[in-house]
Image (cartoon, rainbow, N blue to C red; front, side):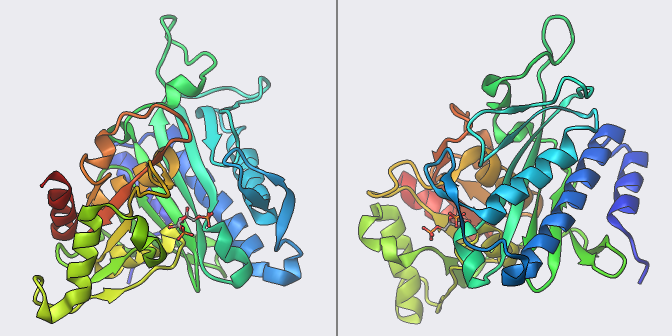
Amino acid sequence: MRRITLTRFLIERQRETQGINADLRLLIETVARACKAISHAVGKGAVGGMLGSADTDNIQGEVQKKLDILSNEILLEANEWGGNLAALASEEMEHPHPIPTHFPKGEYLLLFDPLDGSSNIDVNVSIGTIFSVLRCPKGADGTVGDPGEAEFLQPGTQQVAAGFAVYGPSTVLVLTIGHGTHGFTLDREMGSFVLTHPNIRIPEDTAEFAINMSNMRHWEAPIKRYVEECLAGKTGARGKDFNMRWVASMVSDVYRILTRGGIFMYPRDAKNKVGRLRLMYEANPMAMIIEQAGGAATDGKTRMLSVQPEGLHQRVAVILGSKNEVDRVTRYHHE
Ligand code: AFP
């Protein structure tokens, strides 16, 4: 089969003016290169001396793993010189990161969770990097000026690109630029991402759900009803048996759903009153990827991509995956 590398894929999309220009192409290739470097660092495991926690907390008040910090630094250094970004934002940094004054600025905003699934690093379970690209609003003088948090607070429908890398048995980059969702597998010998999963489509039905069952006593009624129906299997309202998976790395659960269908739920509950996952650099990029693959994503009631952000690190409830199942859970929330 013809090997189409990420570079060729992006150049062909640019030629077809499918929602991509040279600056956005450079941005995506730069992020992909950074993900290669993170994959390399993660792949060293204990012999890399980077396992375990740093002695610092992030803005979320979570203990930072050494690889969290390294991944964040890799993405910052890779992206600040290109002249295509107005600013960056990361789960690991309280405020947006300005482009150093000695570099030119560009029209895009890049947001990322540098290493999602950190609690899985030390137990050798797949983790990943999630990213989202927005356009930076221009000021009255027609320039991007010095963007602050407000410039980032755009609904997910404004994303021009979104993607994630999953560092598993193979490293796969999943990408959308608004024309479908595509998967690229890292060829480690060549050091290039190769198109292996063009035009991913999520089955509209599924028999597999993903949720952290230990939170069951905290759930609201619609989630309780949906999961109990799944557990009742053939004998219950659904008339079929369901399987369950929960990797606790969103990138892994989402990649599985892209590959064979499923529904992923991290609902708000009595413990996580507004949900646990972050809207700007987890839920929104994943929602664009899922929708572009024919799936659906809501916060239980509202289409995820329509949620109007109020804070850079705001959390949100997430229900995403096979369209018919997400529609069912969302319907239960409205009943
Ligand atoms: P960490 O990055 O703190 O491990 O959180 C991972 C995550 O944000 C997401 O990737 C998982 O789906 C979810 O949290 C797992 O949450 P629980 O540990 O509560 O199951």
